[in-house]
Length: 157
Image (cartoon, rainbow, N blue to C red; front, side):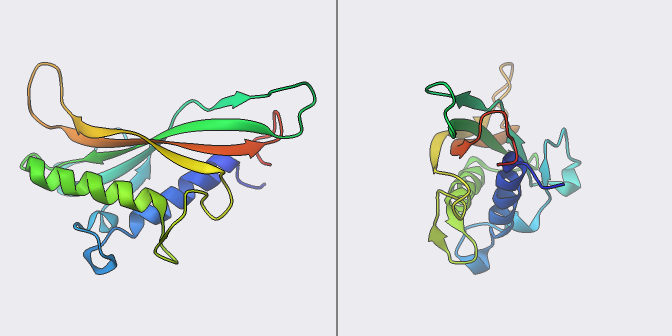
């Protein structure tokens, strides 16, 4: 069975995140750390680590019997941190994730379409994850939206 468009997008994001390395011009080596889909928690010795979360896709069909519908898929990459991570280190990690999301690792060029799979990728929000009862940085997140076209009610095409 073929992969869904969503799964293909997530796999491409994971490949891009895996390219985060000082050898590839990034400030950190986050790509050498665990990268999982929808992780719940990591042990301290596994951190820093990255989690990819695909959220609720919004499909808009403009008129009846439209052949291709626009999809807006919000995604988030969460950075799970070691307790002793400094804010300056976390900012570098955020910057590296932002750069990786939009960079094709094969060409090192900006590619918001994931090789033609999507029509565009747009930034949303990024920053520290801080519980409301403390000012301890528990993690960081980079949110973005991938737009793509598909047949109505067809997750594979």
